[in-house]
Length: 282
Length: 228
Image 1 (cartoon, rainbow over the protein chains, first blue to last red):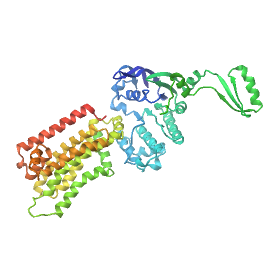
Image 2: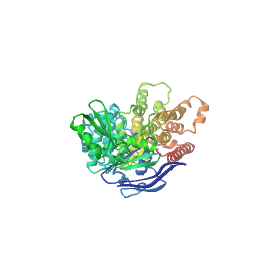
Image 3: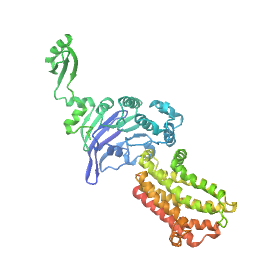
Image 4: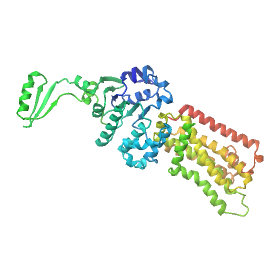
């Protein structure tokens, strides 16, 4: 559905994207993880045909993004973190503008508002919405045209866990319905939970790619199991056949409170590869 | 065409809620109605307030409305959303322009009701022409401005020149001489004659030059900056 091969983009003498390659199959969620300034938004703009690229090959729905027609673009749903809503309009009126643009029947608005949990707030003015509700309104607008490809740029940035979970549920629902989703985030839990495939982007380069589980397993150098015993003691054991009997004994004796593997998180992997955190403190 | 209509519809929906713009649209027609009916001084020029406020209306309302609408959409990043939904920049500008022109013409019609029916067509034609020039100037400000604050600070001096110089020219000869190059002053002179027959070559030429300059500036800025 979306393919990138050795994509390069320069802004004057500064190389922002340095040979990016990936392939996103139809109906999957692809996550691009990287800190601010890694080139995520530039990549989205190129994929949407908003920005020309310098080298490489990019295809979206088997077309060069620069040659996408207006009709093609109506198959896209885009939610960027800095996109605004019409503050003086109600939620319904906000969607009504886009229903007109996409020629979608107005009767669909209620359904979409219900989908994102804003039906009760349909008459609320956008300026009175909370941050979470506003994000959901933006999502509703993104889904207005039932897009085949959805670009979500930091959709849950700065939201509370409950709203975040709600949005994750909606995203997974869209995937279930066949949409291909391109998600950028620096929330590793979000990527781990939602994405079929991810790429870790740092300073314009993909430093690692694959399924979230595979990546974490690949960087599990310790290959150990940690047991927390009821006595408060922590025991570390090698993850091999030799420790199996010992672990089994401890489990049978009921002394074990919790068991953890030493698999790293995506954040740890990113830190190991780049020496930087995904969400750097300011 | 369809996208232009969508933008017009969106702006119409916003009119009632956007008080800043709404005041611009109704202030001068309302003032004209009140002043023209309430004040009558012996020796005062006929339809003095209509002519005075008509020129101020042309210099103020379309200019500020255009600049404000465009810069607000830029500031709040809703313009980008529209562009992503495949609304072309020219469609957006046309939509906002047609909307501002139509609403201003409604205001002009209200003002024109106070004139004898024989003068109304002339009045509306001149108003319509003036609005177009003012809209182009407002679009330039909107395109140039990154946000509403910049737009306001740019609109203010331009608006003062367009709206107040023709009025001040009534009291000062030097201002009167300088003001002849401004389109609103030429429109005021046209309102003074209040007939197609009273149009003078020099006046029409100055109006055309103003219109061409505004259009050229608009296209230059549009090509250079677009709506980004």
